[in-house]
Length: 96
Image (cartoon, rainbow, N blue to C red; front, side):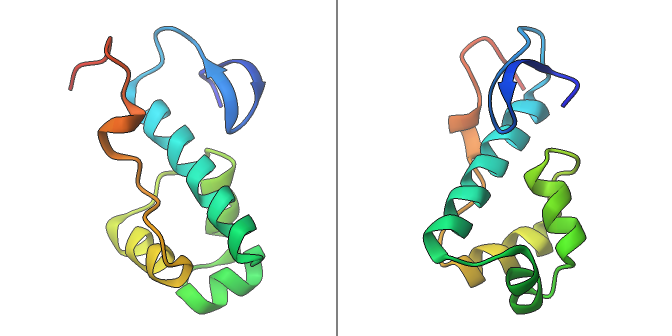
């Protein structure tokens, strides 16, 4: 959230010098929100099915945290889709 230039998270424009993890977090949050909407599943139901607290899912959606691999895997399995954006989240000006 520190790197938001304009708009509402996760559909926002990030400041020019935002670190790569901000871009990944933004794309992940967008993917998670879209998958939850498509699956018509709420925070608590997703948390129960994935074994992840609904508070953690809320933090992920708000850009307050990035998922660990276990959390990412459990969410992807329950939602039936890939959530991690990979290199697509990265713009050409960022280098790892």
